[in-house]
Length: 91
Image (cartoon, rainbow, N blue to C red; front, side, top):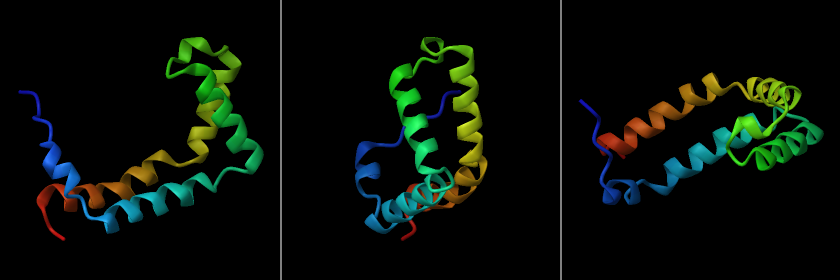
């Protein structure tokens, strides 16, 4: 059975504190990359336009390497409690 999407009013009700926590978490992980790596990842993401097939195999490997350096699992672990608070309505 597919999960139902949250009503838009529920999303709008997300407290700004949670949005700030999310932004701080993402910024902290973004800073794991050097400025040159950030620029490279941004360029590759723009070039791909969301489709990995628009990148060469070497460019795809570079994206994977850089994303791994961002520690996406740690980002998810940090963000899940924020999302749970928003969905459950606890403030």
